[in-house]
Length: 276
Ligand code: NAD
Image (cartoon, rainbow, N blue to C red; front, side, top):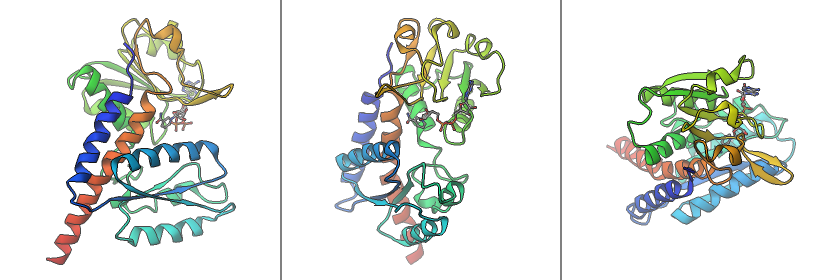
């Protein structure tokens, strides 16, 4: 079975749109800080803007000028953190090399951290959260319990939080990474494989057992075409697999958009408590 992201993402976006309708004319606002020099970051920002607009969310993009310093980012974030009209803030990565990505990313107020990148954020990062939602949709909520899950990749925004969410669902989880020896010994026994490496044709059919469930997080450009980490053509008849594009990507965006009315309501509640 091909696990398409679009139907699941559309349902999430519909849900977000109806939550926004119920806010009686009040509109959450997302601010995206972009790096106009990075084409990939521009594409990611564009997808988020499109989905927000569809759901009735206001979006403002702020393009940081070349050579922006950490302090310039911090000054902007301090203003946005204070601004009551701003519900969520995204610093679209990668930022300019003249600024420190870690310091900048961690300066977002946790109440506005829609990406879920902060340690004490309300939410886990969008990509792993979207993958769990997708697995629930196609496989049912109890599916992961007792399954052998292998996560390839150990980044802070995908691999590590993915492993935690799988563990929270009672899967037996192995994290593999660039120093893992004999990767195939792990993947061959996995019921669920999450590949978040960023190398085309990395996961091939000899590495996967029949009927496994493969989630391809990778985004790679080959001859101008977008592809994932997996040899999709040879895997699609062997196991369940997400396509690239059209798999995890739309889930990441929809998960993010879905969080804005939730954050908005939390902020309203907090304000009301303050005024009491
Ligand atoms: P990253 O570069 O931070 O991490 C890549 C990971 O791959 C590392 O942890 C590394 O240890 C591992 N790796 C590299 N070579 C390996 C090897 N030979 N064997 C085993 N592991 C190996 O990247 P990231 O931010 O986690 O993103 C991973 C991929 O997912 C990228 O292609 C990125 O563009 C994509 N991505 C997609 C979405 C989406 O919404 N679809 C979201 C985030 C990231």
